[in-house]
Every structure is written in C-alpha cells, then in structure tokens.
Image 1 (cartoon, one colour):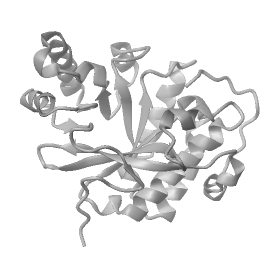
Image 2 (cartoon, rainbow, N blue to C red):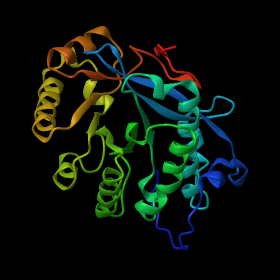
Image 3 (cartoon, rainbow, N blue to C red):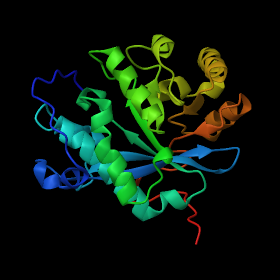
Image 4 (tube, one colour):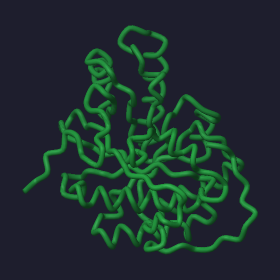
Length: 260
C-alpha cells in the first residue's frame, strides 16, 4: 500500500454512506480466519480479510484502491467486517474479538474517522471493546506521530490496537519505543520452520520477552505445521494463526462453535 498525502478537505462520512458500496467503483466481501488461543482451545479473534466478489485475493482488491477511493474503501471495510461478523455470531463466542485491518494513510483525524465504525458497532449490536484494529508494520508511513495519534484515540474509545507483520517492515522495534499496541503479530517469515531454526528461535524468544515486559499480547502468524505450533507453545506463545488451524472462510467462521 503506497504512502499517500491527502490534499482534499476532510468530509465526514456516516455509517449509511459507508455501507453504500455503489459509491465505490467495485464491490467486495470478507473471509474470516481464526486466531487461536491454544490455552483455552478456542478462537481468540477472527481476522476479517477482504476478498473480491468472485474470489479475488486481498492483493487484487487492494490494487483497485487509489487516492480517489482510499478513505471510503477503508471506512466501508470496517462496516462490512462488523456487519458480517455480527451476522455470523462472532459476538456470541466467549471473549472473541473481531480483527480489522485498516489503512492509517486513509485516516484524516482519528476521532472523526472512527465515528462510522462506532455507529456500525451500535447498529449491528457488536461490542466495541471487542474490535481490534491491525496496521501492518510493512506499510510506509509519512508520519509516525499520526499513527500514534490514531492508536491513542482508539485506546481512548476502548478499542484494541495491533501491529501486524511485525519484523517484516520499516520500523521494527523502534516502533515500540513510541507506542505500544495491545497486540503484536509476528510476521510469518519469523515463524517458518522455527522448530528447526535456532536463529528464529532466539529472535522470537527475544520479542516475546519484550512483549511480556510491556504487557503486549503476542500472536504468531503463518503457522503451517504441528511442529511450528508445538515449539511456539513450548516457549509460551499461546495465540497462533495460520493454515495449520484453518484457512480463511468465505463469509464463514472456521472452527467456531456458536452457542445456541
């Protein structure tokens, strides 16, 4: 996702407008992938992953986003994720969160841009304190202070903050000096074959120690084998996500046991 500078004035958009995808030049939906809590043996969260209506990947859909529609797309993604997650019963799962990726370069003012999200949570009866917002550490940011202001506002609103793909991008540990999210998601390249790789083991254990000191929950992404999962469990990484557990489900919740 490219760095963007917005020259046009900010115009607040309400929840109803964000649901009207006719205002976008394309339509989209969501797939959901669980983040597992292996201590409690249930989903810790479901991550909403954007998909095209004909099965197009997230990368394809994001290639349709440009400076003219980035803000409305970001807002519409939030509303669509909440609407679908509510209809699928995420809020009925014990302490289960909904994780939504957002584009920090599409947020003009955090306190204003969050309004449609909060309206959607109220409209679809989804507890706002179970909403988790992920920003990828691999996205270039024109202003780190801007991201900090977004995270500060989201915390003030009672929302959960997360850094995705940690270890793969531009800032790394320096980012944690300036702001600490609730959740840190380790990039899958740090996880691949970790059960056999002492270098990856040392790095992940080091990050786990930092997270413990800063009271940040750590999620390991991209788990593809039992051996990777078992090693991570052995060093205390209880939250894990990847194909080993479930592939993203098109408008469904894999591994969910919805209470009756």
